[in-house]
Length: 120
Image 1 (cartoon, rainbow, N blue to C red):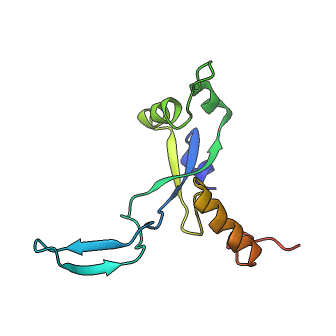
Image 2: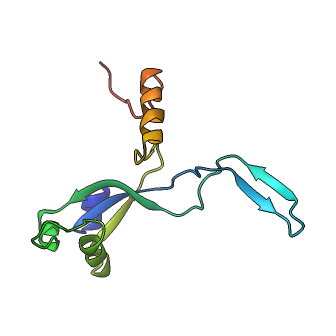
Image 3: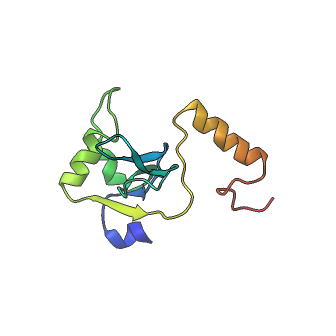
């Protein structure tokens, strides 16, 4: 619905990732005045990696093997006002590293995978 209502060629899923490390407030003296383990990120929205595309959006991908979707095509779509965001507030976690893969597999194995929303 979000994509249809936007009238844009592409809608990407925007997410706000949590921080990966503990955050510190360090006074000029070197004293740590506040420690917070893995706080919510800086509030920035990032590309969550899921897209809804109209067929015409693929015309923005030039011929060749070295095209990176998140670079030239999305940049051009944004410049032309054809890129929409769907703000996703639910569970999201990247799987960019081996650590991420292990963590997500552990959640699955423990039966605590928040992305499993279907019945078997």
